[in-house]
Image 1: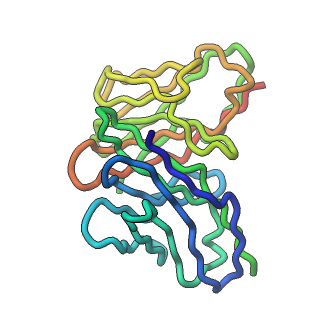
Image 2: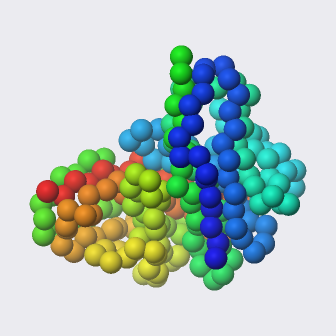
Length: 115
Length: 114
């Protein structure tokens, strides 16, 4: 069955430190992969996406992610975290190719940034 | 800019009431989705629609129904609200073709059922 795993529920980093949020997926083919960010009380905003080509993708707000087929991973990185990056981050795959248009989301990683 | 709007940001309803949550998108997307979001559970799909008047159940459709009479509008209906439907509800839309397959989300409706 298709699934997305974000193993870290909470992560705390100091402002200016580097960040890596992990995402592993289980899917029968190369999926479309996404990272979204959600600020408190808001909807989800797309940070970046991958569907083919260069496995290192750049997104908004200085984020990047690397697709590693051999590890079924799509980890999100930022070299220097800002206090405004405190939010919840969701990894997702989809749309599924099994005849539906469904997407699968991880359960999210909540990022706290220390001043 | 793609815009997905939801009719209310906050809603308080009583148990047993019929509740309508409306979502409108302006990108001519064929696909629209309703999710609920609860702490620790991520986003769970309630229903989605891939065309006008077409709908399919998601993972947790019990207690909900939907309506899509026009392409841009997708409504979620709680037939008889219960306290366990207190949650954040997110609407999204996407295109089924082309390179841009990402979902665009509305700001969410936080529903409290008392």
